Amino acid sequence: MALELRQQLKLTQQLIMTPQLQQAIRLLQLSHLELLETVQHELQENPFLEESLEETPQTTEEQRAGREEDRDAFTDEAARNADWEDYLGEFSSTSRQSSVREYESLEDGAGFEARFSNKPTLEGHLGWQLRLSRLTEKEKNIGESIIGNLGSTGYLQTSVEELAVQSGSDSAEVEKVLKAVQRFDPVGVAARTPQECLLVQLEVMNYQRDPILVSLVTEHLEDLEAKRYKPLLRKFKLAPDDLKEYLDIIRSLDPMPGAGFGGGEPAYVSPDVFVYRMEDEFIIVLNDDDLPKLQLSSLYEAGLPSAKEADKEYFQEKMRAASWLIKSLFQRQRTLYKVMESIVRFQKNFFLNGVSYLKPLILKDIAEDINMHESTVSRITSNKYAATPFGIFELKFFFNSALSVDDGGEVGSESVKALIKQCIASENPKEPLSDEQIGDLLKEELKVNIARRTVAKYRTALGVASSSKRKAFF
Image (cartoon, rainbow, N blue to C red; front, top):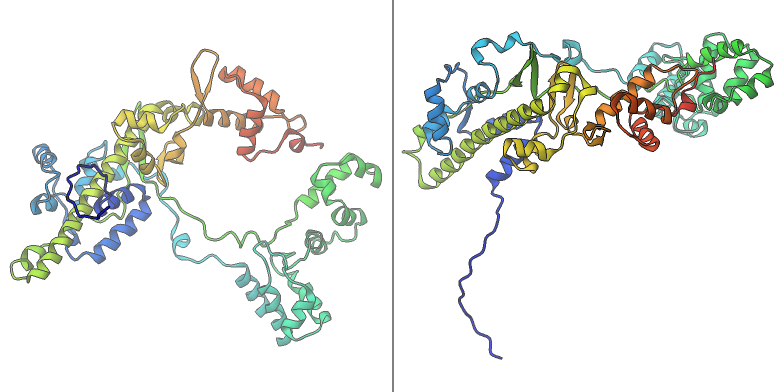
């Protein structure tokens, strides 16, 4: 069979993700802080995108209507009028003239010291004490080796023999310095076992002379953790009140003295949207703190006539990128506002009364309400936080599964978790509620039939131990 070339016409449909569309989708997923970084980066990279330093007059209804008609047109005039201040002014259920500052943020962020001061590390805290100690230079070198081999919780992660090799000394010298470091603040740091850590703290508190207390720490920590108290009462011939005094002393000790330094810097959440309650109505305000007002630079008009053909292509490319960024930001804010407005409508009882009144909600409900695709709703609710009258919550928090109730209705799983937490908080410590008893209370309160294993699953998700481990014997 001979090979030959042929021409053939064929019609096909294909969805192509353009770079502009990819940028618009990426902006939907950004949190408020990430959005700030992206906008600042674009301001530095694109010479035709600039921040307006002048206050823009309030947009009239006629101007706003005209801008709605021309929103898809990438003309210079439309792009110049579509500045960042107007975007945020449109997507707020209160006008900008009413002074948004009268609705103060629920959480203004960290204080000055928390923003600009560094949190001390465990290594730095111990090194400062080591330099102020009366140890010799050789002993201080050994101490630096010890401090450099501590874990995040403050325990020594190497042996004395290895430390002796590292510092060029013998084991007796290392033991001497190790004993001194263990009495630095926090007391018990550089211990090799939990027993050694607690014994050092008992020694500093002058409790090391009590043989029963020392024996409880060295031999019976597992029994105390499992609350096996009766064998201990028989072994040491103690009354319950005496054992309770020993337990109070042990509970006052810190088994992980370095944990307070090893947690890293705290993460501060900046809400993307604020929801304020005004009587029975709710005001939705998008977070516009620190967001620059964007507009197209006048350099384009001034430089385009005299530019070369190659430069004109570069100018047009950067101008299109700047215009598309402004439009994408506008679209992001519009989508976020519409989604939050829909969430408030569906979860009105939550915003009025709290977490216990959270209703079942899925992405499809919001998507159908605002006539958008579920994937768009999923992206815009990722990594976003809302400040509500009851605290700051991630937008994904408002979406939860449903449990059927006796009257044919449904109740949200988060409401069930909140009620479980309330039941456990108000229980008698000496007679904690079992999972089956909690299920009966849920049936009585919410009229919901819930299995014991489901209660156990929700209790575990809340980080609450079982009834046998919550029981207090004293």
